[in-house]
Picture 1: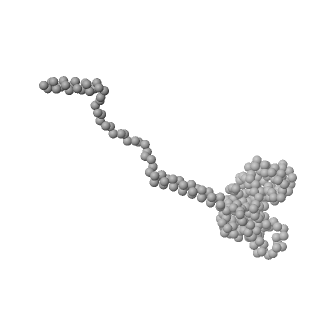
Picture 2: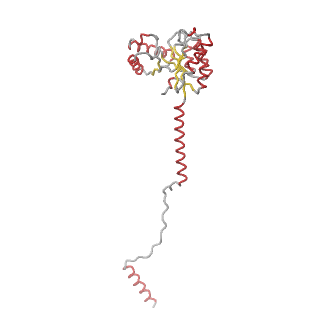
Picture 3: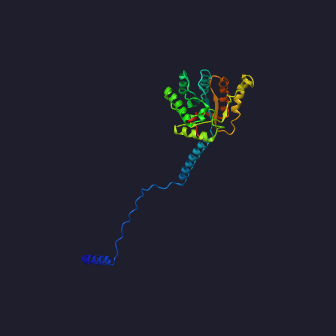
Length: 270
């Protein structure tokens, strides 16, 4: 009887398989994905907010930098033992750096060296400071390089900024353009000025006493800064410019009160 049952089971199984059926398979759980899960909405919002904040901060910093008011004190025609030294003392006391457009002079090595050692910049103001520099481009270049060599030989210092004697205003553009090309070829940028203390006025002493003249010089600068984020200030430090040296502390104070910081022309940016 038992053998008959076994035979029936075998026959039944064979028939089942022949019909194309299969035995049920055991369910296999799906594998866990190793991909990084997407950020939750809150986290994505937070990161977006951080990026926006960073961009805003950078834009604000850039705007603040562009809105920064910078004054560049420039001092021409020195050095001298009296006024250059007095000007350097003032700059040191007030923590201001300046640009000195010097002329080659003997027995002034200690002052040239002090200008550099205290963090100021020396600029080329020509060798001769003569009008013939505007007559011949060849003479201009020879004079330029002679002054450059004088400073380099004495101080191992290479000048990269230049000021035309008397400035470029009022001169023919064609004359200046030819000389600007020479300057660029020799690694120079040139600078005029935005305001002046007007210390070369031949009638200065006729305007009043020392106090009046010094106040006039101060006003020539601090009352003419409107709309100028970059302010190049012209003054002189030859041996006759004692009023200039005395006016400088008040000029610096007045510009600081208007929100100006100070820098040298080698760092000048439009």
